[in-house]
Length: 177
Image (cartoon, rainbow, N blue to C red):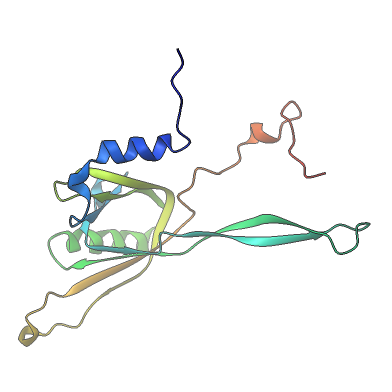
């Protein structure tokens, strides 16, 4: 007897794995650089985890106004990390100093972690480097923490790189024609 599979099997597995405890809880982000000397710690806000594709149109020459649409070049926005300045700010400063002296892209992971520190989702970045850093103005009368912001440029978080074997003569070529 075969078991019918739901088209939503992956979503159902994720929901049952995550359980009801993760819904509505406070989350934070951990930035783990593969070079452990630069572990950047936890962050309270991450923006820019987005991807888009240019729309490429190809007009079919002998078919009137028929247009074929294709996804073009992949574009990733810079990622902005924010948190209250604290002990890990020194690690960021050290990384910025070293990058200023000897620029070298890093690789690592941004993880969305739940209230217990358990990773829920992660985005793997193969190459990234800092493009901006700032800390809010200090105001002792404001009774608010100084917010540290770090902006990263990156080459992406999708596993969509073509390797050399993908275009070898023995592999099939995909074509709309």
